[in-house]
Amino acid sequence: MTDERSDTASLSPWWRHAAILVMIFGFSTLSFVTVQTYDNAPPIPARVVDEAGGTIFTHDDVLRGQEVFFKYGLMEHGSLWGHGAYLGPDYSAEYLHRLAEIARDTLARQRYGTPHASLERGPALEIAEQVRGTLKTNRYRRDAQGVALPTVGATGR
Image 1: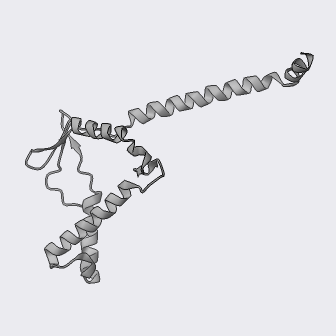
Image 2: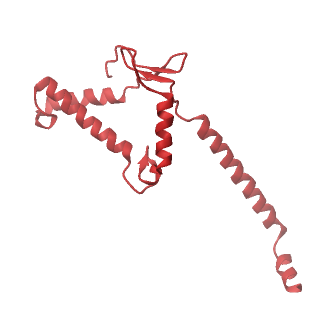
Image 3: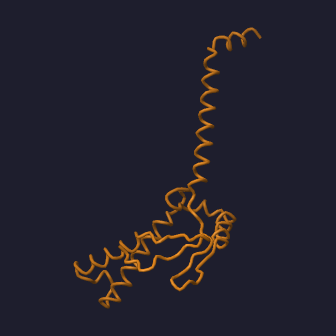
């Protein structure tokens, strides 16, 4: 028994103080980051409408989608927006890449009757720049009822 007391007595009492301070600082930081995560969460609008005023999807649709995501443990199968489980592809990057390819091809076929890959350099750059502007334009607006409205007259730039 005297051996145990001599071992603990040889430790400085500042170790206990340091450990307590580290725990207080760590849990305070964790609490602050948690509050910030919820305060800065992306908005979920009450409804999202198209140009004609028709409902595309609602707040409840988003919440049901989140329930499916959690029910099937889809966070274990890839990364969304660059975070999450790293067991699969980043679906957001894959989606945005495919969206840009489809938009370029669609626009090229409308204007020139040929896929984007078949265009000359000048028209291909023009189409690519227009698609880039269209995809990067933030069209989110929120009315007083929390409805996400399309931007009327958006030029894509």
